Every structure is written in structure tokens, then in C-alpha cells.
Amino acid sequence: MKNLKRLLALASAMALAVSLTACGPQGGSGAPANSTSAQTPPSSSTPVEPDEAKPYIEIPAEFQSWDENGQQITRSMLTTADNGMVSSLNYVASKVGADILESGGNAIDAAVATGFALGVCEPMMSGIGGGGAMTIYDAKTQETVFISFREVSPKNMVADLWVEDEEGNVIGNHKMKGGLSVGVPGEVDGLCYALETYGTMSLEEVIQPAIDLAYQGYTVSPAFVENVNRAYNTMRSSAQLTEIYLDENGLLPQVGDIIQNPYLAHALERIRDNGPEGFYSGPIAEAMIDAVQRAGGVLVQEDLDSYKCWEEETVSTVHNGYTVISSPSPSSGGTFITETLNIMENLEKYEHGSTQWAHQLAEVQKMVFAGRGQYMADTRFVEVPISGITNKDYAAKLAAKVDMTKAQTFLYDDPWPYVDDH
Image (tube, rainbow, N blue to C red):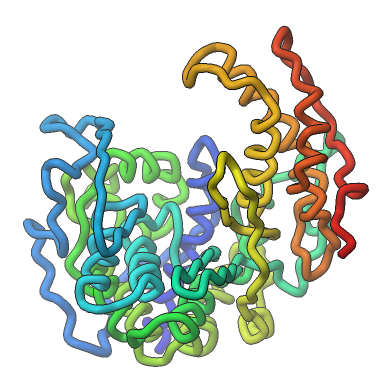
């Protein structure tokens, strides 16, 4: 049990590394997840035999993001489909989702399978130690739903724990890395809830490809190497991260290498066999709590026991004849993309890529971002003027501030008078 708990700490160890990788420009020293050497984890099922020369899913040459020299390249593709499509940041994860559709699953089954697979092959972007959101549109009923499974703050987290210097900067950058940067993970609860409520397949069916992918491995891309490089110092301080993501000499992996993660595979097996309880209680939960607390955090079992994802109404607007449906608070993206589209409707159209187009878009986004910083919050705890932010008249007021002859600095405006009280 001791060995299992130590090895399953990778879920939270990656949460610490991802906090630095995704948000910070440079890799830091971080806090070691565990200073002891990792060993082969036990398995509750028969794993796929690793084959270093053959990843779980081969990436066709036309979908590879690198050339024959391993250099990053950009590919532009236009693809159509009659019966469904899966799009994600990674070809392998998209293939997992597409296979689920082809086997008879619905869009939610495919989305959940893709989500778990992304946590394996894009660990710097997502994973079971993090959180997410899902916007669902039912074409038959024309109904929409938004599921939020964002991370939440541990109950013992208070602002005073982020000690600031005289200039207001958090000392040690604890809001970005280390134990105090870790929220209560929501991804497992959210994906399982979406599958149970709106899917048609079993958890075992949709999570097994991610397990096989973790056991057998996936191909390293230039973007993967770049992200490992940015978190290199953090990874070097962890025996487990070094063993999995660096080569035998502790150096960066090379494009085309195969990454295998049997530790994550075993954690996913526990979720497969026990559902969310296999993650939020038992050895995985104990390992997360231990790793976070040793890194200076305040995560406790009560935080994991009390976590539940939640549903909210979507935000929407009509733009150029199209109904745009997106995510509400606490996800800032959808609300403020809606506001941006509303503002742009009031402005002159310029050629895409032109200087005028870039200037206009930059000015609008500066206004929108100022409002985002002032008003965006979790509506379960804070009143947020979403209907005011997305109001067309409010957008027209903001559009009038754009000056095509100069760049400006914008403070947030007041959307409260535009809130729909009905």
C-alpha cells in the first residue's frame, strides 16, 4: 500500500508541474513530489505489453506536427464529415474519441473518452489532477446545458497564505506553483457525471483507451518537448517525473520518442473499477493530500469528499445570423467572447490581417479583458452581471470608445445598468 500511495502521487505531482508549465515562462525548482526512486506499479488488470518502437496509436504522416528533422511545422486542413467529428489538441486523443463514435457512442461518450486520453498524451494541458467544463447542445431538443467541473479552492485556503511583498507580488509565486497553487481537482467528477447523465456507454468502455495509451505509450511532438523544457527544473526534482518524461540520462525527450506512464494507467484503472470514488477517496486521495501538503498546500480529505460538479445556463448571442452558445461563469471565455462579438458588430469591417483589423481587435480585447478582471467570478458565491456583460446596448456603448487613430488604456466599465431584471 505504501508503494501504491507513493506512485499514485503522480496525479498531484503533475498538477504542480502543470501550474508552472502552462502559466509560467520558465521552469522553476518547485517542490519535489517524492525524492525516492519510482518502481513498477502493481496492476489490477492485464496491461498492454509496452513496445518502445510502436505507440498505442500511430500518427499518420499527414497529421504529424513535425518534419523529417523533428522540427515544428504548421499544417492547414479543411475537413468535413457527415456523421460526426472529434477535434482536440492531439491527434491520438481525437482518434480515441472518433473510435468511440464509430463504435456507436454518442458525442458525450466521445468527449469523455477524448478527455481522459488527453490527460495521458497532453499532461501539460489537462489531466485528472485538474478541471474543466463542457457545453452540450442537443440538436433534437435544441436544448443546451453547461457542466462546470473547474477546480475549487480548498476549505483552508485563505488569501493571507499568499504573502505579498511591498509591491503586491506574491512571494515565492505561490499562486502559480507549489502546494498553495493546487485547487481541488474536478475533472474526474465532471467527466463521470457527464457520461452518466448524458452518455450511453459505460465508464469502462470510454476510459480503457486512455489506460492502454498510458501503458503502451504515445509519440513525443515538438510542442511536448517544449513544454517539458519549460518545466525541466521541476521535473528534475521529482524521481517519478524524471523517470517518465525525461530520457535515461535525465535529459529532454526527443521528437518521435515514446512516452509510457504505467503509474497513470494504474490510477485510471482504479477510476475505471471504482468510479469517482476511486479517485476522491482511498490510496489516490491519500497520495494527493500527502503530496500537496508536503509541498506547502492545505488540501484535506474533506475537500475531496465535498467536491461536486454543477450545471449552469449557457450564455449566447446572435452574431451575423448565427446563434453562438458558450460557457458562462466561472469560465471567463464564453461570456467575454460573446461580449467581444457584440462589440465588433458595431464597428467598421476591415480586411482580415490588416493593420486596421489588428488595431481594432486589440482595442476591443483590452476593454473586454478589463471587464473580465473586475467582474468574472463563481456565480455560486458572487453576483456576476452576465446578462449586462452580454447585452447588445452595453456593447454599443463600449464600441464607441474605440479610436482608430491611437491605442488606449481602458478601465472596466459598468454593465450593471444593462442587467436583465426579468
